Length: 534
View (spheres, rainbow, N blue to C red):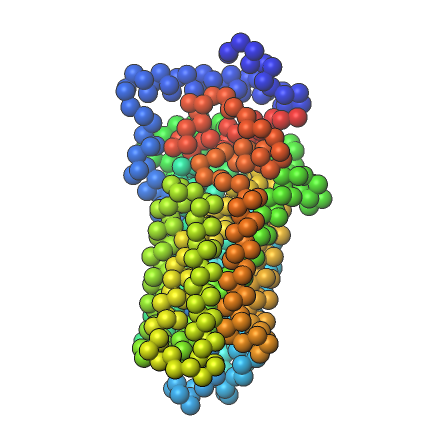
């Protein structure tokens, strides 16, 4: 043990902390000697070593595919529900729906999704992520069946409510599950899987809507959650949950499943065990403690600003009403296929974001995308202003398609992909449960409110006014991001929390154990800054 190390152990630390840090030092020295002797780095730095984690992230987020499909379903279904056989055949319901009724179909799933975060958080904490995942899949399947069989407005609305309850649970279950399993050097990339599969679901809905009947579109919404539930069965339970439940052997098996051959599973389990024991001793944060804590409070303010940024940049409106807007733009191409192009480009942009997020950084991507979206939304507003003023804009039919597509691309590269990534990096492990439950609930409420009152704003300030309002929102968000949002790329969470607390960045001990490619930086930092600090 290095001289003076005892002085680094704060008062009030667990009684076995000195022994524990001594074991960490021995493990650090042993690994350093092995790597120096072999002349190589740890095997975990090999890019192929994260293949299992990528597969797990894909399977865990298959239900995100269904969430995107539910949003895309609204865009392709609204024209059918409004005409109900006069333009599209066969009739979908027993009568055509009004514009107000269609707005309720769009927003019902978002309103009901507000109960998902808290419910899924409770189920995950009490029974684990596997039961929570099964519950989400079964609920989404039942909602899809209700929509498929609905022949009236009430039944259709009930189905959308059930689907929404499952949608609200997805960010908590899928992202928290992968946060327990992912290594730190791929934390950002795996954090974008929700947006990636979500956008893929939107694209799938647009494609199916362009080539299939209404009932066939609804049938796919039943098949997707069934596929997820079956595939999720083959994933192991979260190693951290198993360890916290006293199932050490099962936790080791789970961690070995996620890690490549040659990874130091015993060392990581030792860190994980200490963190779990410290959490159980402290009991986590209550809501009152959360808002009394300066770092949690400032982190939550940043979280809310990003939520408003995501929901007031016009993306939700575009995705849910894209077919109608392209029809109103008098485009010479099919509105359905124009929507497919938009969704396809957005999916490619999300892939780009997955590549850039751990290289460029969060703040540069957010600010660049917001500035670009503001420009695109202003141009769309000018087009519809000219159209509504009686100007001949037939030669500019391509403008709304191009600018809306570019706006969605920029959203996918920025706030659309990074909200959930940054949300997991702004809070300590003890504060995350409260932050996610309240934050994600607020997100779905804001989203539902924007979509519900969009039709009201159309009457007040017209479609061009709506897009100019969205553009202003992007610019205001950039002001906050520039002055107040900390950069979180490749930074230990304890450093970020310390910055929000106004503290100076600490020098972490045992740096050889804190290799980002090793995936244990966060555990060491949490031990030092989150649980051992007085």
